[in-house]
Length: 236
Image (spheres, rainbow, N blue to C red):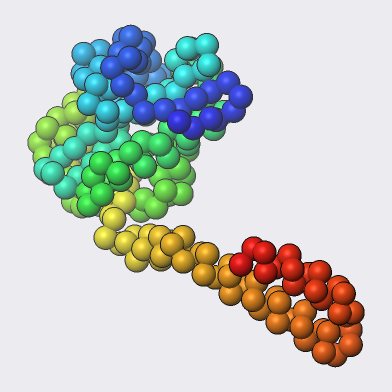
């Protein structure tokens, strides 16, 4: 669970959150109309199923007010989409969208560590969040070609543009996170975490040697050296 502020909590959704499915669907549809773009329409049953599968993230206030939502879709076994990101109007521009995206991204990486994570969006804020997570802009040809995915674009007002361009381009920007390209960096991070204690021990010994040098040069009294050394040695 992630605490956005003193009142908003972002967590993995489960069956106990199914009661929020209708309000989530209603806000998805309303938001799409306001923006003039489409979010693939989903039924409350579909949203509830995602929660039950453990493939969704929900944000709530401590008193149970719905704040935001996002869920995981899988395609062809090698692609994952973090779909349906939506935040209640009264909680927008609070930073909660970024926290939801981070949570659903981490959940996707944990459940599908080898899958490519992608998304289509017209929102500059979402593009910035995706970029911070490691996504990169790509051509549509680098996304899944699963017909079920592209069928979800039919509810968008720009679907005619997509089909006219033979699904090679549209008003949305395609972004992709490929775990293979990030593997070396992530491996270095993990190795550093595993060996951080060795580095810390080395630095303490180095500081001890430095103190000894000051004593030899007469720049620090024996009492002070022993005092500092005792503190350092107790933490080795």
